[in-house]
Image (tube, rainbow, N blue to C red):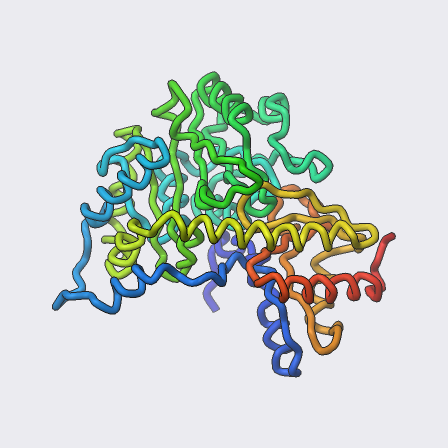
Length: 399
């Protein structure tokens, strides 16, 4: 039999999806599974997006421009202007979700063997994207005791080498929900300028900020336009993950010209998704106000319940819709599988994402999980009761 590639061998499994077969088996046994493992919003997609697909008046669904439909890119410019981000359509390449945007950015700006610094825990697929591009991740651990805030810049400087080409952040953060402050971003600005690095910023959770806090975009950092690449997506913002429309944005003309080669090689982003995404640009502010109020209530429910469980530590995040919590267990990979294979509470159980997959450092996150609070408050209350009961009966409990 022919051998698979080394890259295929090295490609990591998704910590978010690898336990799906165990969840399916649990459901076959009649057990209700509360899915807290994946960031799939349950709020309704704006009706404007649905109507745009229902009322589509085209005879042929054609390839779009490789950079995306120009009317959509113009609409995106209007959206960003409302967030005080001023760009031109030529600064945007529409992609098949933020995932493709990250791949384009990494392949455009880094060579195989180059290094990229990422505060961890980080979005699990960054591991996969780096593997695909032959890039090495240099992780900098952020600590749960410090709410997963940006590590001191001295920690970054310890790992900067001639091979270092970029830093990537997710703001607000997946998987921790941490919202980086203006001061933290200013420190990053000074660092990328000092060492002439790229700063990739995954800002797909921009609207998800709580307790009166607001998001500051890297696009508004001064004096580093050529260093900045913004990654964005409609998936979470409009509860439309299946649309698969994202964007790569930069004022660096050489970066965008080069990224277009990758965009042309894959021909074009999904046309149907762009029709729907363009329609979403007219979503009223009331949609987001209601969304934030709902997710804030969900966050409060989960954080309060977790911190009331003996031995559990959970920071109160200011953004996104995730928490990363420390559990009093020996190994969360084993615990999360046990929840689906062997445990039930009144014929119910919970599916969580082990945090080990959100780290690059071996052994890190072994007692942590990511929880997505994407269910309604009543279901979250029940899910937290299941989790508390599970922690009390798990044989690998450590406290």
